[in-house]
Length: 227
Image 1 (cartoon, rainbow, N blue to C red):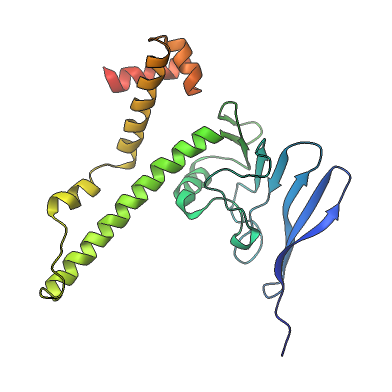
Image 2: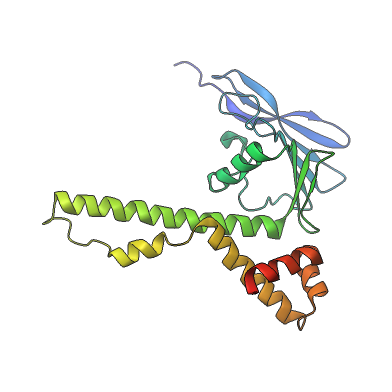
C-alpha cells in the first residue's frame, strides 16, 4: 500500500522571538509559510493560502492578530487545511475589500478603534466591530437560505401536491426577504446609537466614544436616521 500524501501544518523554524509554521500538501506540491507565532508578545500572523497554493487573496496577503491569546475572533478560519483567512460567512466582506480597497494587511485587535491606514495599505478591525459585521451578514445569509427553501418547497408542491402539502405562506416568504443588507445595517446602527445615547444621557461626545466613531460621524448618523 502506497504511503498517503502528507497534508499538515509543520513547525519550520523555532527562533528566539517566534515560531514559523509552513503548510505542507504533498499532493499539490505546496510548501509555504502559513503562520508566525511570537513568543514575547501576544501577536500571531497568518498568510492565507489559496486552494492550489499561493495567496488566497489577491491583495490582502497578511492577517495580524493582536491580543487574542491564541483564541482567534469569530469569522476567521483557524486551520491552514481550510486556507486560513475568513470563513464562508464573510466571503462577501473580503470580496468587497479586495475589489474596492487597496489593503495588503488586515490587523485584528481585541480593543481599540477600527481604522484604515491608506499609507500602510492596512485595515484595522477591532473584535466588536468584526462581530457586528459577522452578525449582520450571517443574518442576511440565513434569510436567503429560507428564501431558497421556500421556493424549493413551492416548486415541489406544484409537482407533487399530494406528497408536499406544507407550503410557506406568501407573507412568510415576503418577510424573509424584506430587508436588504443596508436596511439590516441601519437597524443595527440605530439600536446601537440609541443605547449609547441612553447610557450617556444624551451626551453625543461620550456616545461617539462608546461607539468607536468620531463625533462628526455620530452627528451625521443621527441626522440620517432620526431626522
